[in-house]
Amino acid sequence: MSMFADYRDHVGASPAKFFKSTLFQSERLLLGLNCLEPGQEQHIHTHAGQDKFYFVVEGTGTFTVGDEVREAGEGWTVWAPADVPHGVANRGERRLVLLVGIAPAPGK
Image: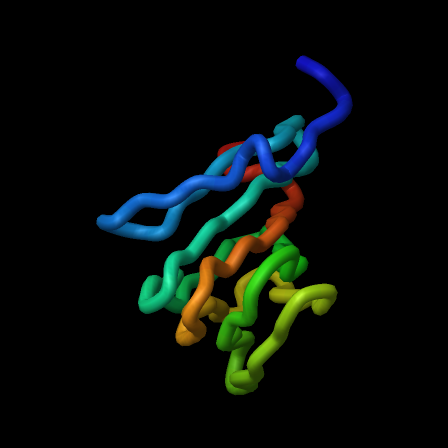
């Protein structure tokens, strides 16, 4: 596995649901991309014992973290602490690309 990745090599689309791609994974961290086309969303969910962040690479999303709902665009980071409900929706007109980190990695 290479220690270097260009996110653009991992961008994709799926008409049925948002697209996910893993860039790196270890026992301590999962780093990946979530790509949401206009109208797609990642439903509100939780990660027991896992912290998560979203970094907006392209586009704009409507993020829910706990009781807070905010729009965030390119360059913004959104933090979802362990066990706090969170999700994101693309209500814009172009693809939303998110760098996502989860620690510890799922299933570890």
